[in-house]
Image 1 (cartoon, helix red, strand yellow):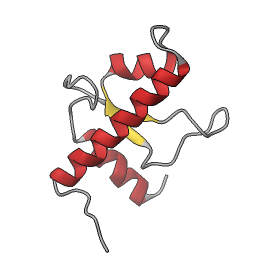
Image 2 (cartoon, rainbow, N blue to C red):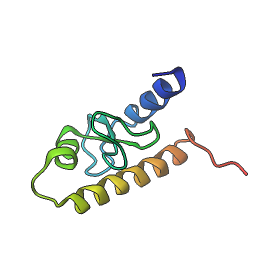
Image 3 (cartoon, one colour):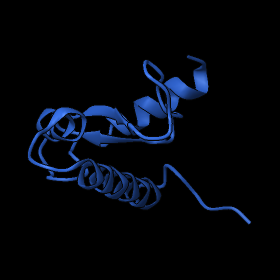
Image 4 (spheres, one colour):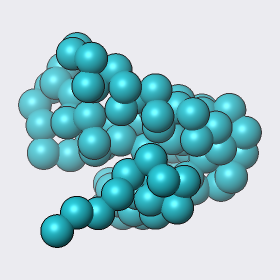
Length: 93
């Protein structure tokens, strides 16, 4: 992992609350889509998730695979919104 990736993960973890349920205390969760076994997705394909939401998306039995993927996409969109609002990510022309 390079310095840029470490900085990204640190920034995501610093959001402190789950992108889905709002619970305090997060893990940096990777998107589990479009990658091979044992491979992690790109650093920006992550979101801050509480342990419960992270488990449900990765291993949960209450949602279908499509629902779990939709939840992760929602978490990633909310993460981008929060980063922009916090001034940690900015749009350029």
